[in-house]
Length: 235
Image (cartoon, rainbow, N blue to C red):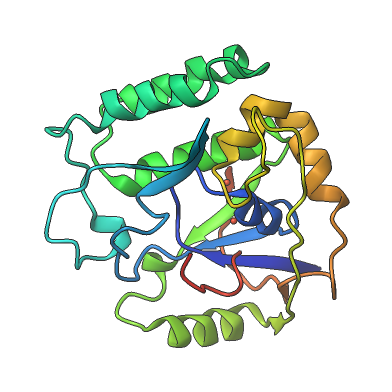
């Protein structure tokens, strides 16, 4: 049986393009053995405030030159309070804010230690809200010490995969204020239009060449739970 595979590192409340890859794939190869990218979407998300865009980070402990799977959250910093305060300011008046606020608050206030854990949990949560049960494998379990290109080659060989490219056209939806801003966190969509409408927008985008990687499964144990990105291009 041919499957579509998504290669991507875990991100913090990722944007729509991330979930476009996720919803249109069968398997997520979680690229968590690669080096953490400071000030990337691995540890921050973009929200829309009344007068522009803001970046909301998760505080992480230094040094930052570690694999993604070993990055530790620095809960001695007030990032949780600042994040929740900003989310309330930016989205508190949105129609779907009461629906998702409790879950978001619980994730942020949880005692999680590893950045990867909060990224995975929030991504799987968002995918589930859109009706997607994601199956995934961690690259650290198969490709420790390999570069990104070596990892792609190795995984494609193991999976018997064939590569395809895709084109993502960002959909326009109703936001709290004008002008429309793209490449924001999935929460912007959820709070403004809800998960069901977000799923409709993503699944109605035409796939060019039907996806990223089509594979014939060869013995990988897939976990039933939460993504691809233009083949690991950093966000």
